[in-house]
Length: 268
Image 1 (tube, rainbow, N blue to C red):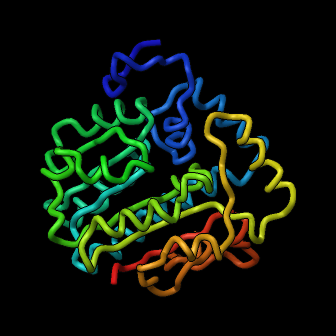
Image 2 (cartoon, rainbow, N blue to C red; image 1 turned 45 degrees about the horizontal axis):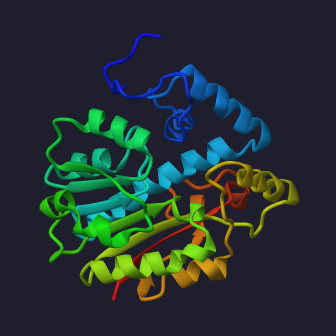
């Protein structure tokens, strides 16, 4: 296989990458046959997975526009994956070229791809770090150079905390992020849920325990607890497609089938 210009030399093209699988489900071009094969296997077990990922990306675009409307032009995106197909910097910098975006991911493959893709964009920085290590993220010199922590920052945790077990205190992670940013900052959060899900979907999610990145389904009450100290904006914590949709849901569409709850909040 010939190596495309966006694929760094240290990346093994014969092994699938979770970040590239996500890119494939989003309709992106930063993936290979091995990633598409794995995506097909996942979709055969959980047919709604692609729609859920696309609904999450659609929420990202809507929430970034809302954050910009509130005057915030700084973004800290934790668990960002590969920044393609309408990601934060594309939406924000199209509206305001002065916007600054920090992408954080623990996956070295996602980080390597991201740095190659964003090379030459001075309004972005890519940092390799674990979402649980909040203090290292906010103290990183590249983060501090790009973001002004005296002004409001939008913190995005869109589908990363459901990989964090309860023992690692996901609500505590969000609380430490809240303490790291000034009043007026905003938090956008997405987490998969077991509420309103049919038994077969919950059983399929349990298969993730066989991988190195098991998924932890959480209740609405558990997710609301993560917003402690933040004020949720209308319509609150809702299923992904119900958060200020660009177009109404089709007749008979079940928003709960997307399996994730989303919300946006402001620091008091």
